[in-house]
Structures are given as structure tokens and as C-alpha cells.
Length: 376
Image (cartoon, rainbow, N blue to C red; front, side, top):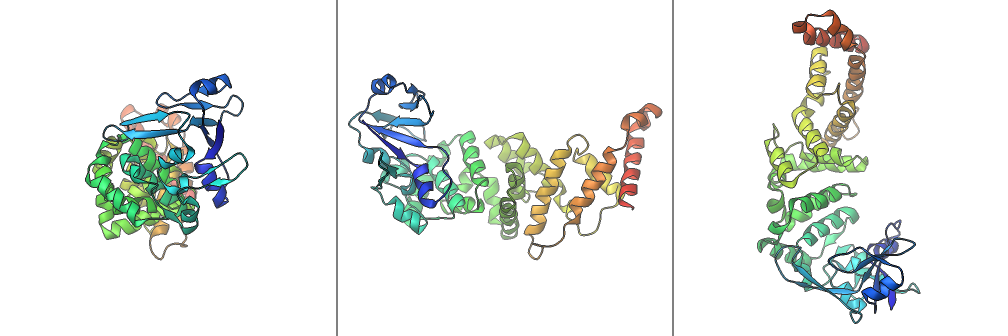
């Protein structure tokens, strides 16, 4: 029985990155052996165990055989005679197919270290084509590390797309991978790789259509990169990307419903689509326009989301050529306007007004408060 540290922690160690989770492969052991040592089995489809003290994951060395379409049609075989090299061979790309033994020696049967140094994402072997999730993962790793995809790997990805493998991906998994890619260092690279693999039009036709239009593509990807460079959250990054998807949000609605995008991301993107042009105008908004914008964006009930709206609009503004370092007073003025409008005692006004006039009186009071605060 031998234990090896494998996968992402080996890769990140070689890159000099902070190490997060440690995964291990156990060669020469059975399920009974692991349980006798106090490991708790947690994998139902294949033998994965939690260490009794550290809770790190330990998996028995295994091989896989494709039995059906998509990424769930696999038969897993784990046995004491499965070697480490066989286990590593089932992994997606070479930089994830390295291991270290107990003495710290690097085991690299598929050239992962050389590909890491060259900045190349290369599939380990022919079994790569059996799992369509790997297309999304390769695109995500391109966004994380800024690496390029090896030509032969890209060709395999195109073949998988043409055979309809990506059509078997369930919506939740597609969004999960896209969301993780959006949070990487250079998220626009994920979409470029998916385009090159001809997969984006299959999994996200609305995004593919937007990115096929050169002006919309340039501003959308630049806004996304700006948001990533400012370490913005997922909802802001998604909204910055999707703001040119359409004018009223119908394509956004289709995209979000199909991929089951979380409400936080969907709602912010919808607001950005509707209001970014108004917010980013060079001329200051008039008082009544500010009050109307605050009301239509539900800023009084959800001020935190309104601040996210302003952040997303700022990413779009600064992504515009020539405005990378330009002042952006809109955000300050609208935050001041929101604070002034929220200081109005709507309850007191309602108590003194006729029911039919309550809304108008509150609106007038808020406009007056905004004008006073901004000296308009």
C-alpha cells in the first residue's frame, strides 16, 4: 500500500502558488484496508475516503471505461493492482496528471512539468474525448493560468463538439464551470477557448451571438476583464459580460432560464442591460431622472444591489477605449442621491397624505432631498 499526493496541489506547488486542497491516491489497497485504518468512505460511484484526522480525500487508484453518452456514462474499476500511472492516465490534462511520493519525488509520466513550463494545456490521452466536461475545464484553466491549448487537444475538443458530446451536459454543470471560469484571473480567455472549440454556440448561443458582433464583443470582454482586475464578485462580472447581450433582456432571460443562473446574477445583469447607458452618460442626470432611476432599479429596498449596479456600470465605462483612467463621478453622485432619498421619512408623508397622492408626494420629497444634497 502506497500513498501519493496528486493533481492540483502538485501543479500549484510547481507554479509557486498557495496550496489549498490536497488529494491523494492510494495504490495497492482495498476498501476493507482503508476502513480498517479508520478512513471513512464517502464516494458512492468509486472508492473515495476521508482521512480520520485531516479529512483530506484519499481515493483508491482506479481506471474508467466509457459506457454511455455524456459525462455520467462511466464504469469505474478500482483494485489493488491498478498502478499510479494507470490512475493518472484517466485525468484530463497533463499538468493535472502529476504526483509526489512520500519522499517528495515528482512522478510525471505524461510530461506535465514540461507543459507547465511551456504554458500549454494538453490532454493526457485518447480517453480525454469521453468526458465533455473536460472542454469546459480546459477553457477554465486557460482563464486561470493564461495558458494556450495544444493544437491536438483543440482538435479533439472540436471533434467532441461535432459529435454532440457537449449536448449531453446538464445545465447546472455548464453554469457551474462557467461561473468558476468567470472568477478566474483572465475570464475572457475561457470564452475564446470555447469559441475555438466550437462549443460556445452549443452551450450558450446567446453569448456566442453577442461575441460574434465585433463592437459588442470588444466592450463586453473588456468590461469583464476590468471587473476581474478589480476582483469584483461573480454577479458583477457576469453583468459586465452580458450587458450587450440584448437591449431589453429577452436573450438574457433565455440564457439564465436554460442554465439555471442564480437570481443574484440574473437580476443584476437585467438591471445593467436596462440602465447602463443612462448611468454612464457624460452629462449629469437631472434630479427627476435620478429619482426615477433609483425607483426603477429598486434601490430604496435593495441599496446593496444598486451599488453593485454602479460597479458593473463603472467596469463598462472604464472598458471603453480612451476611458480607462477617466474620472467616473456618476457613481459618487448616484450614491449621494440614494443616501439623500433614503433619508426621506416616507411613513410620515404617507400619514399626512390622501391615499391616491402618497406615491407622488413621496417622489416629490425624494427629488427635493436629492436636489438639496447635490445642490442642484
